[in-house]
Image 1 (spheres, helix red, strand yellow):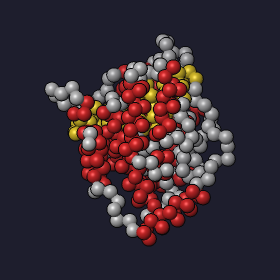
Image 2 (cartoon, one colour):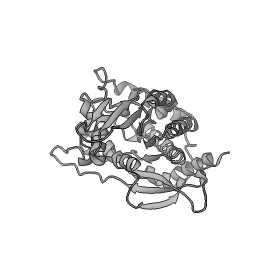
Image 3 (cartoon, one colour):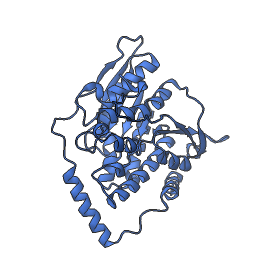
Length: 328
C-alpha cells in the first residue's frame, strides 16, 4: 500500500472513527427511501444553465492577462445564477485582477453533473490556453453517485499533476458537506456528511502531495443557510445562490492570490499532512498547503500548513453584500 494511500486512511480513521459499519438492512432500506424522496424534492432549476464566465476581467489594468482555468462540476460554473457577474469564475477573476493588478482571462471547462473522473477531459480542454492558475470545485457528485473515494481522489490527483506539468498552480475547493442540504434528513444526512468529509480529507492529502493547495468548503454555507435560507441557496435548495457562491469564492481567493504571487502570511499551524487534512475538514474556510520536512525532498514527507482564510460574516436582517475581496 502506498504511503499516500496509507495517509488517506489515517486521516479518515482519525476524523471519523473508522467508518460506518453499524448500518443494518433496515437502516439501508430507510436510507434508500430517503434518497429517493430527496431526489424528488431537489428539482432542476427551470432555466438553461448559467452563462459562461469566459472573458477578460480587469481589462483596463496593465500587463498580459493571467489565465485562470475553472474546472469541476455545477458549482464551478455557478449553476443557480443567471448573471455572468455572479458566476464563481467571474467573481474570482474580478477579485484576482484587483489583488494582482493585472487583467485575468477566464477559460471555463466545468460541466454540470461532472464527477472527478471527468477532470481529465476538462484539463485537456484548458491546456492549449496555458493557464497560470486553476480553481477546481469537485466532489459533490462523487458522493451522490457513490463513487469509490480512492478512484475519485486518484482522478483529482492526476488532474492537479497534469496542470502542474505546464506550470499551472491548482487551488481545489474540497467536497462540500452534503449533510447541510435542507431536503436531506437523518439518517441520510449523517451518511452524506460522513462521505463528504471522508472525501474532502482524502482530496486534501492528494492535492497537497501533488503540489497544489486546498480550501475546505465543508459546511461553509450551513450556518448562513440556517439564518438566511432564501439568500444563501438557489430555489432548488441544493445549489448556492449568487450570495452563496460569493462566500465560497471569498474563502478561495486568498489561496489563489498566494499561488500566483508566491507570497503569503505565516501559517496558523503546521502539522503532519493527515492531521492537517482532518482539521481543515472540521473548519470551513481553512487552506492547506505543503510544508516540507527538513532534510527531505520526498513530497510524501510533506506536512501541512494551515491558514484560516475567511472569517464568516454575521447575517442580520439587512442584505449582506458579497465579501469585499471577492467582488467583481
